[in-house]
Length: 547
Ligand code: RAM
Image 1 (cartoon, rainbow, N blue to C red):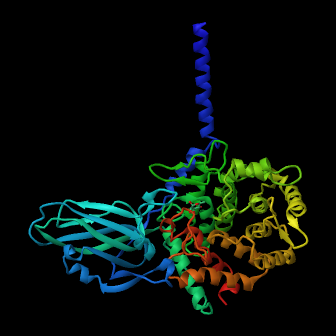
Image 2 (cartoon, helix red, strand yellow; image 1 turned 60 degrees about the vertical axis):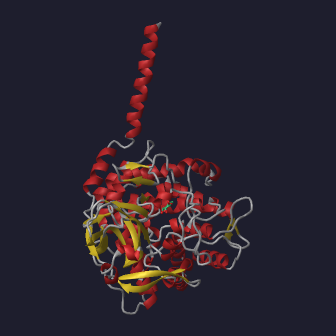
Image 3 (cartoon, rainbow, N blue to C red; image 1 turned 30 degrees about the vertical axis):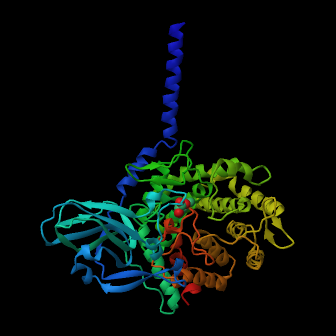
């Protein structure tokens, strides 16, 4: 009896171990893919930036979030004085950078008989330095905020903060010193990092000044998010998210052309996909590449396929596309699993079992949006299959597209007003129209009507941030509303320019400077990947944006 028990136990153990081994290797080459990605890790370009000015923060109700940084003195006025006298100062790097902060301390008189201590705060925008961080009301980690205590044992010394930061402004506060010696700060340097090397071409001379400015800031935004992966934001979350990568890689094709970075990201996401072969929403690089386990984000998993297709078209690298094709094919199972015979997505179940993101927008019903996005992905994946000569592996896709379109029209489209509506309260949102248009459900005229009507419907839920604005502009272009696309791009991103953006923001609602998905606007990211896409539009469609 005892022996049997042990045998059963051993068998169960063996089963657990082997199923785990299987679980970790949904794709037999998963481990090699991670190695491949690691081999593609770019060496970052370093630029040393030396600040030229000191600023002060001035309250101004017309400035973004109520604060403006006003130049007060050249940097030498800091270097020539005692920091014990100054106590607190704000240094301006002159632009937004991502990297490492170094400064020197020099003795003025006496011998350092104690450590000295600073509080350093790094801000992407002025209000970040003017708003008290505590008591912290945010819903994500307080530690994202870039305030650091630095204790220095020796003067004179050269000191580098070990944390990589992302900022334009640096507040230096002296919080601990001794009365028995005096010292000053000198030689502040910021080592800026990026994997964007190429100098993108200049725009046509006919491009308007505001379009040029938007392009310039978009390029800057993308450049800083391009590190050893496409990060979402160099301040926060400093990691690869599929949706951000999708838009960054689009912009990259028309600017920095660092295709190896896209390749690396595609490999790493594939290698770190979950035990069922689904690409997870986000992964981390350190201390070693690992996924955020369980982060199933449906729209992002599906956009992996589109990124792969675009990568193939931009590079002609069939080898990579063929290697990763099984991953794309597997993502289609997400669609097959949630779409019923009738061609409609089981939204309730999808929404329960996955995170459907689409936008930071309170109350958005994503039923129509996910139906549209699935159609978009089916079309794009079928195109990928065609480019690879693999249509035979996805034979059911063309008919599924037809059924899903029909179902969308029959169940989610209100013929009377020409709009897609969803949810118990027949919610009307921009997101629903946009994604159905991108999914190819409406013809040109119907699309124009849907977009025009939704823009004339004050109660319609409008896009919550730049990520959805990207798809909005693409939808306008797809249905030939070129002038409107340009107007929207200029108004929306130009709105950030007018409010003083050095890089484009994660969150921007022209009606509310203080909006934050995390209940604390200073923790928003002000250099954010998904906000770089004007670069893509302006450069891909010069006829629309550069004339
Ligand atoms: C946030 C990040 C990122 C986005 C996800 C869904 O944490 O800002 O950009 O892709 O959410």
